[in-house]
Image 1: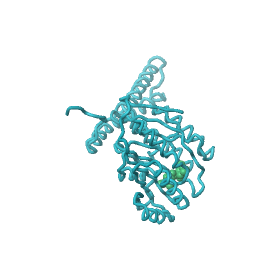
Image 2: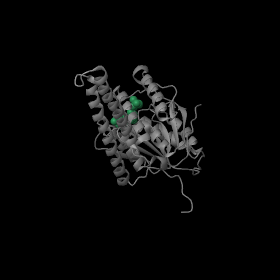
Image 3: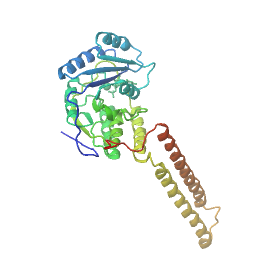
Image 4: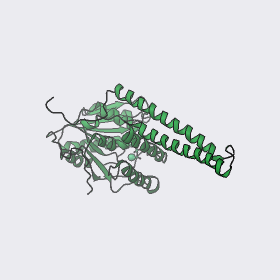
Length: 331
Ligand code: UDP
Ligand code: MG
């Protein structure tokens, strides 16, 4: 079994004996699944004997999902509902769930019966061992090979290379987090796939365990091949945020300086060619290249300076700091 533990402090934290679990499920047009899903999770949660809440976030469903959820919530007070005005996406639904949750442990699960509620107990046990994040790994994934499993394998490989986080299955929704860690991050776009990477920047310890996976029987997947492009763009954003968000001038200014260097080299070559080979400067394509490189180089540096200004405004406006403190002592 693969276990990756990345923590800056390197030590496990003590966890309250019986923490409360908040299970968050985003829902978008899942009418065929909700009743069965609810029955399965209520059964699994009652057997692990923790206090818990089940938060369904209805992401603007247009089928009868909303009515079914209201019916479930009317019978069970541990079921809480957040109803969106329209479809805002899975990441937004998960963020709303986090904001309204009160548990020390936060779990996510899809509401399409693809994840197995029986795995909840094992994820929670791992959190109680002291990990901040326990990620599910669909070892036997039941999705189509070409449009799901192969792109996902490639994406996971690329993401772990770029981010340094060794997880096999970032796309698996079934994951458990310590609430205090998760509540420190903000999510945009479709960044829910990158939550473990975001929390690893804070210094979270991460592990993964194999989980069950079922084929989708009712309803359809909400994602197609378009997600490949979104994941690539999100990955670029994540890399930028992770490596340069507090020093963007290093990235943009770095590019700018390289271009200016080559611009000057091309300009020098044009002049040398004029005096040694007698080549006409205006007829030399290197002259155009010199101009282009110098202009782009200067623009890149300007962009870096603007980005530096923007991140200062960003941190001040959000009252955030470019660091995360675990504890302070004797203050
Ligand atoms: N979902 C959502 N909003 C959306 C798309 C999906 O809340 O805009 C929910 C969906 O109901 C499901 C989960 O997110 O519970 C995962 O979606 P899906 O099963 O379609 O993704 P896949 O398993 O195919 O990757
Ligand atoms: Mg699914």
